[in-house]
Amino acid sequence: MPPKTQNPYGSGTETTKRNLLVAGLETMSVDYTDTQLQLLLSYLNMLERWNKAYNLTAVRDPMQMIPLHLLDSLSLLPHITSCEHIIDVGTGPGLPGIPLAIMSPGKSFTLLDSNGKKTRFLFQVISELKLNNVTEVNKRVERYQPASNFDTVLSRAFSSIPDMLSNCRHLASDQTCFMAMKGKNPESELSQLKKDYMVSSLCRLEVPGVDGERHLIKIKIAPGSNH
Image (cartoon, rainbow, N blue to C red):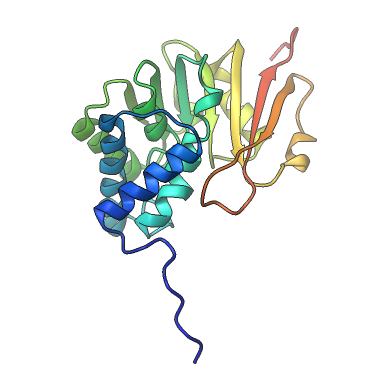
């Protein structure tokens, strides 16, 4: 029999989690307060606890959730500095919305998902962690009619980029930025964009502890578009 491989993420104790998260934040040059660090860890523990009963994410090990979920979400921080009203479409258990909201208390976040189990979890997170800048919405995106448009529409694992744009257009103004997080460079998806949209930025995201490629695509509505 082959020898058993050791878990490279450690034992999963609170100290180990904290150390791994701090190392990742510092590698990414993310400024944080003790309060924000504790909120991220509290969210992680809630996600781990609820995941056992409700299967909110396929990642089971909390030590893997740190790079694959928390740090991956926070890699967006430099890209939302000028954003104020953000919607995270298909947020699931709050990714990337909850980590971003913890680190950006001055911005408002709407977390949208059609899965009731996941939005119930989000309601509990928002209540327990007292995240006053976050609202959860349990609806399909095409049925959600916001009171006002968002300046940023985020999607981490929602759908293809053309589908995201089509389904989310009613959430946006002509100045809205659509941001799609992807693995490999989605060239085939981008080749299917309608002329009403233009790619304003495509960059690679570097996430400590994540080996696979990560990309962020920013898309704007083309000037003069009739959409």
